[in-house]
Image (cartoon, rainbow, N blue to C red; front, side, top):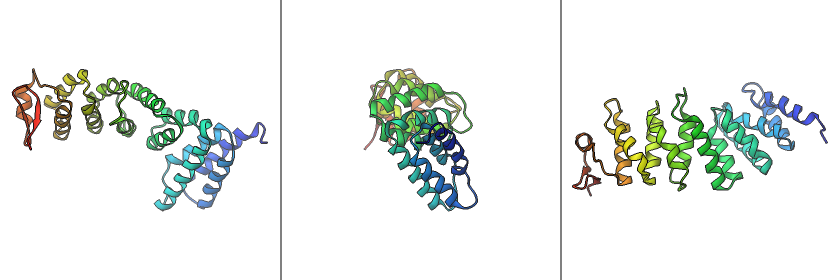
Length: 236
């Protein structure tokens, strides 16, 4: 119906979708128009709404939920644009994951997250939010692809990322993570809150502290202790 003009029109509407000031009905009308267009560019323009915040926050939340529902209605046609948004944007990772969770079976979504984590590695980013969002999403999920991608984040520059990785690794009991977790716990420069997360993760994993026992015991506080077998236990 729109011919070759639909993608171009969708791209032009993006400017209105991200217009933070002025009459909000202009932005809301653009969102509604994009929801009626069945081209990938419409999904991409709607996704841009998640990258800005407007006042009042109730309006912001309503518009984002509206954009979310419109994108979800695109079904499988929305998958690739949302994947591209997750790969290319440092913003709104949680919205992208929420959309993919609604559009993809879990094994496929885990594959997307693992691929992103592999790409991000332990490299420095000014805002670690994307890393933490991906790691939190994978926490408590059981899939053999997850643990190997989490280990490098124990060396991340951000303490929040390290803590997220520790919380995710603890229940996975991934033997390869034992040594890096112990190194992180006992390193002089490790912040106390990271040490606390490392102790909890080692306790949960059931790994022994062989080779690090003296240093580990010096860092433990009630209710944790190291038993005769060299495993961190919790009293009570």
